[in-house]
Length: 356
Ligand code: NAD
Ligand code: DAU
Image 1 (tube, rainbow, N blue to C red):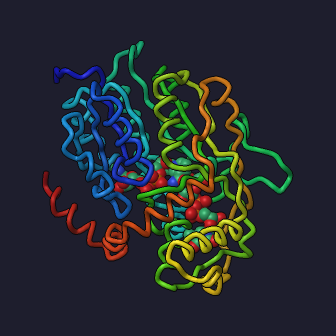
Image 2: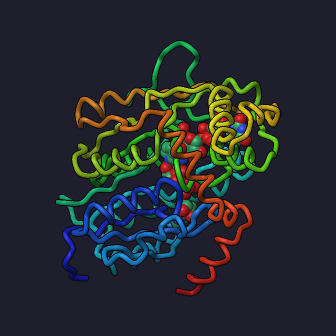
Image 3: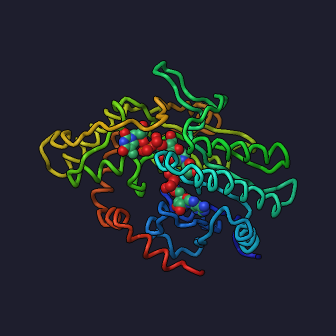
């Protein structure tokens, strides 16, 4: 298909949490690019996340499953796709413990189907093409409380079915560069937080539970550590790396912002209580220690100095500011939260896209 755009970029998983921020950034910042958002609209996909940009001329949504090779091939050809930013995945560790097959299917086979399509549609030496795969720090396994960090050369050591499936997909992406010369980039990022995150994940789940005076299920002793990054900072890093990153390279993305779960939870409680004009600390009584997550990694911490030194990226938001913005967003967007928790969002959009 001939068109007036400089690039036709396929963003997979664009109806999800991080994907919606990436789609919005690209649609806003690059009117000269044609952005095609491909998403299967699983329970985690919600087109309400993109309501503000859905009618832009340089934006198209396509409902498809990344595992459906024939459909993906057709979409590539129909839209003359020149670049891929691949975020579609099953992303929640607890679900992967209950249903590992779905994670292997989507994360490994789905990624493979996209890679194979790109290889068939693009011509060696692949001038101007890029297949950018978004991955996680969880592939590196776990750290102890010893001040060390994950770097780009840390050996893979995944422990959950989720991280094992993401590790598998990362290996396939690199194998496609090594074997076929497909121009690929992989990034491994730490925990994201911010608006539009599905409320199965710690931060939105706890904000919503505090609001409704529901128990806050803290796994184990609450001593596990995660490294938190505001989602728009991740999207900015993806933009930079897509344009300036070195083909075949890997970059770690993180906030140098480690929090023990229980300390983070207390910050969330304090912020929600203050914004709801409740007495300070009132909701601490909701903290409920529950059985630990199986195979729960103790500590994640990303060293993102390569990205800073080579491409000049740094997080723009201090954590205090980011968490304040995030809590406020969820409290101000109760309708979004209610639609997600009731399941209404799915019925609406699924109906809209059935048989298209
Ligand atoms: P998410 O669960 O919010 O969104 C995933 C999206 O993928 C959804 O819109 C869903 O509908 C779509 N999807 C799922 N299966 C699909 C399929 N078979 N075909 C097409 N679309 C499908 O996930 P997220 O938190 O936004 O994560 C996005 C990516 O970033 C994932 O690859 C994840 O591994 C990675 N990542 C996430 C984090 C984080 O903290 N959330 C951190 C590092 C890396
Ligand atoms: O590190 C990057 C990863 O971060 C991403 O690859 C994943 O897609 C993303 O889901 C996230 O994984 P986590 O397992 O770290 O996120 P989650 O929000 O599920 O949990 C954060 C921490 O809080 C973790 O140590 C488990 C704990 N937790 C979580 C939930 C949902 C609780 O104690 N109670 C809970 O109810």
